Image (cartoon, rainbow, N blue to C red; front, top):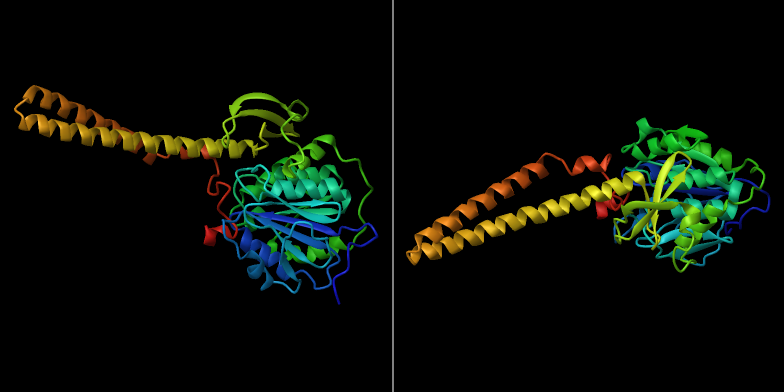
Length: 354
């Protein structure tokens, strides 16, 4: 018998799940304990690499049918829909949307766009779940779910392989339930059968940001509505960033639509410093090598003064390269990234697939 369409009664029939580093193991544990007659549709986004076998992997863990998300597909209860590499998974009018919208928190697919569009479309019917991962993707989306009357669930940080995402959600969101991954399936199954709360108007900022992910806004005409101009530049496109105060959480968006939690900006800046230092070290090493080669040629031509000068220059370049290498080795740049084990692209299935 084919799975039924979304239940006409107002229950919690939309479950959105997001994870990153360590998230694959957590999602498998959650799905393993969901019943085959679950009266809800489940949507999963993990930070994955360019090639993904996630639907096949997750299908081995659950009695529910697991399918790769397809744009335009109607949402059905009793199915697990899995986000695909390189595209945001969004929900709109009882259908799925796949869009190559601006990356959020250095990822596409990202968790926040899924959570935000679920909240904007289904309101209090949504259950949002944040699992293991680094940085804070999912926190802003979970806040949107709560603001629209939905339920928030977070993996117990001590149970998470990488606890930063659950900890961030707990810090900035009034979380309803904290659970171990192995116990979460039973919790979600119970919540899915409970009546949803009253319908609340969707805040305008949530609608705006959902539209940005769906590429329904040609550019960021709504910057001043979402926040105020900041002095910082976008790590993705180097355009100006707008600062958004989302409750007590600080977030940023650029005019292209790239979005970041503050820790993701910090992590991206640390990556850029690492790259700049690496380039600087290589440049000094190349200068030293060239100076020594020129010095040798001058020595062969009996121009000892010029050869001595070039050798001194070579030693200076080598000393500079050593200083830069020591700076890199000290972890100076990495400290700027905070809990940067996962820079947005790794984690989840991507741990094994790049």
